[in-house]
Image (cartoon, rainbow over all chains, first blue to last red; front, side, top):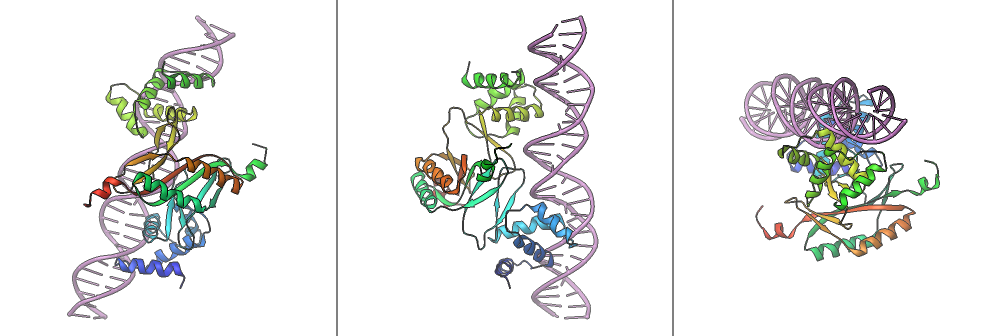
Length: 146
Length: 146
DNA sequence: TATTTATTGAGATTGAATCTCAATTTCAAC
DNA sequence: GTTGAAATTGAGATTCAATCTCAATAAATA
């Protein structure tokens, strides 16, 4: 059994909830993705495969996956939520290209340290953070056009 | 004339747009605020003062104020955009209390440096950034309750 | 004055997300 | 395997911020 499935099953069980076929399909589909995705995308993919699932169930299950620590909500400034995997991915932050919309992940050791420092100075119990840097990516800078 | 008004007038003029009474009211109201606000809040405040303005105009004018560099959109994870002043406020980042929703601003010199470094390493032309640290604020930690 | 262009506002529309509730499924207890 | 309690689902309604439409109006220019 894939690790995400075991975790999801356990998390559900611990709350008296069931591992249903629908939740299975949505879990599979969410973990087939290798980058950020939106709820509507996921719904669309599932329906294209003739697997019937309702919009409500997709949204509900994504919420459960977040609560179980398998997914995370990331906001990139659009009008919809994006999700990304937590399991098997160390914490990272994002570079966002304002021209092509590409999202590039990065990590930097010093950032964690800096965060600690800020929290100490501000007397804040920091638990998580997001850093987004907006700008122009290398590919777009290469293109003089547009 | 207040600096924000001069800037707005200039910015509009340079694009062949007009400084209308409605735009004036919205500018005033936006700059009376001293913290983050939402478009609907602003509309409500204006209407409470018997100044008639349409929803469409508020949204359109806020967009203009962003384009003119007077306001900035900030997302705190809710379902609506928040705006904050740019003019007269140096760049800052945010601590967000997950318990009481309080938003605390902070700045840290090292963060700017770190950003430069990351961009250099990633070959990215960074233009702006946002760092949000989520956690529990000092006040809420003081309250053992809840 | 006539013409062009920008602006406004009421209301319709969009679109993501959530909610409702009857029908269905699952599970545990008997 | 029957029964009852609880969880789950899905179709469609609803919410809500945000945007769009378009006719009426206002301002600038010729």
